[in-house]
Length: 121
Image 1 (cartoon, rainbow, N blue to C red):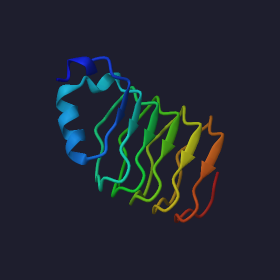
Image 2 (image 1 turned 60 degrees about the horizontal axis):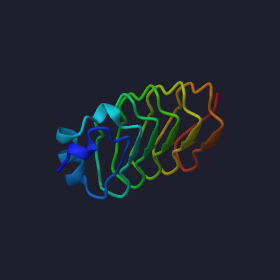
Image 3 (image 1 turned 60 degrees about the vertical axis):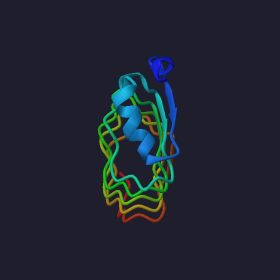
Image 4 (image 1 turned 120 degrees about the vertical axis):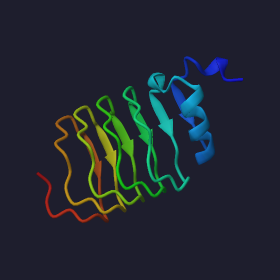
């Protein structure tokens, strides 16, 4: 059933159960885009090739290191901090508990209201 997914670049999963199933059957290192909103997730797998992550409305308390990430939509989670994301261009992180942001030299768009940020540097 999963043989056609061996070269998958995009995963759009509507249920946490599917994420667990796909992790073991699809070479997750191929994934460039992951959409896992509204699933009550508390963690995500490490996907080193990920460029776009949409993980809104979950219960995430942290995110794995994603060195190639360019776009991150992570609003309405339980995040306190974010990992280093040197290639990030777009960040939507409102409605979390973030106290500081990592250095993001390529950032073009930032939406971070309703956090616990004291300053932006």
